[in-house]
Length: 145
Image (tube, rainbow, N blue to C red):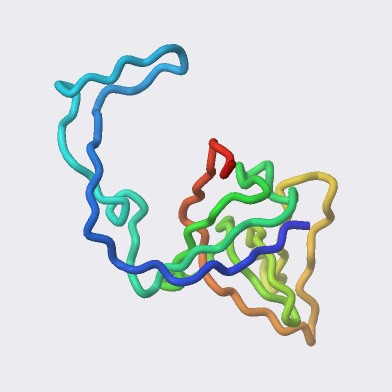
């Protein structure tokens, strides 16, 4: 089961990074300064709408089919309403999850993206809160060591 750890809100950044227009092959790239077209803000790239955006860390393997792995940082927008098919941060009776939202008539289902985990049907009497829609994920490729 994938749960989340809330890391906190995202603030506006003034930093801009060089953006190279050339796609990088998964071989041996040779980025050159003359391919740089512009600078790009991570706020712009990730569509950060502070203070309506926050970060959470995924915990578990129930969303691997959606490309969300254990330890990924998820960018979550509170400004978006969850629609059918969205990956959302949801709390049921105080327990927080990252799941795909399925709306079938009056039925609300939170789906895992790993066949090892069954769907979670929201039952009458359950307290469901949608805390936001996952818009992006960030994966670290180098360990902290």
